[in-house]
Length: 183
Image (cartoon, rainbow, N blue to C red):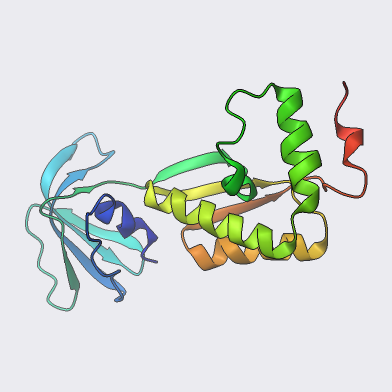
């Protein structure tokens, strides 16, 4: 329920505590909306159980936990529709690789060696990094299905990280991944 609130807190030198109540008042932020009438304004956002309940220059909600957003931008979370979250720990290895090299290394060298606990760690790290960047909704194109335990680990990491995630299960890396590439 609080992952959307993370956008208001991203970029803090010292991150404030994550709000714990179901009723939150994001106070005094620069609110960026998609509403053609409201547009952008300085004010408050009331969030009730993960959903925006009210917007306005000065809202009153005595029962709400107040989050000071006076030096923050409050905006809808970003949506990413294509991420291979299991590759988070491999992300910058092949900036100059060709497509053939990408498949050969990421899939057929590294991917086949991933254990379920490696998939969990990579997915958790990748999903948390996405949240830190303001991506509150993510489609994880997960093609590291070496076993059912790999799929379970990927899903568990997405759940443990929070946010809204779609697990899009792909092809397995084993037992014979070479069938997916042509030289």
